[in-house]
Image (cartoon, rainbow, N blue to C red; front, side, top):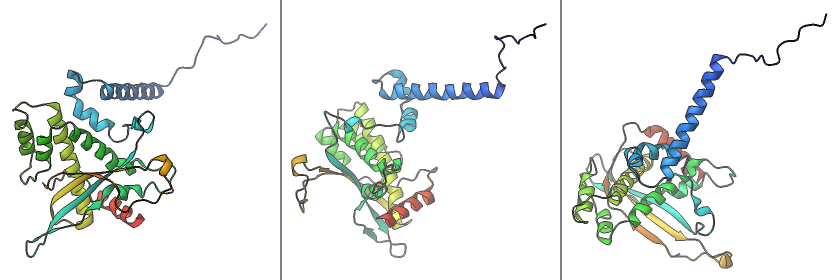
Length: 260
């Protein structure tokens, strides 16, 4: 008699753990695609309600700069510079440091590395975010942002002045520049403490844009004083996030300084 063959339609049961892993990965992808959709979507009530969470997820690892491609390729070097006021613990006198170019420190991660870390783009992305928010302001509001502020626990003084400059009505451009100013101040604080120690009491940052030479003059000597656009922001008190790992940040900066 012929041997009985197993039913061709019979399939091996998938282990429960494999099903769980598959459902988890699908869920992660769905959430990622949802966040990406909201990030690129026009302003709407849903996006406005979860904008901070979506921004925190997308930046800096999933943000892309489409200006790499025509018709508007990147045509300038964008740099973020930081300086600080350091208090002498014995005399109480304040010393203003020289400007430190945070972006050029990060560029040391790119040199001779065909696949550099995304850490090499942090200040470039921050420059773009702050600069975009700046461009949306009126001339009067830009002068306000360039002014010094000493009491900024919640950044409300800056926001109030910006709102008053546009007739007392709040707007998205005020929210954007206040958030960008706060983020840049937090970064400047960490950089300043890593470079100049714990006695830093105030920081200032500036945006510097240097045009890239045209293709037809790319081999010409670099001018001693190239044309630059410099946007100065006012002095801000130090801003420390309680969840910030200052020691780890300082270790990274020390490594960048050594690379330079």
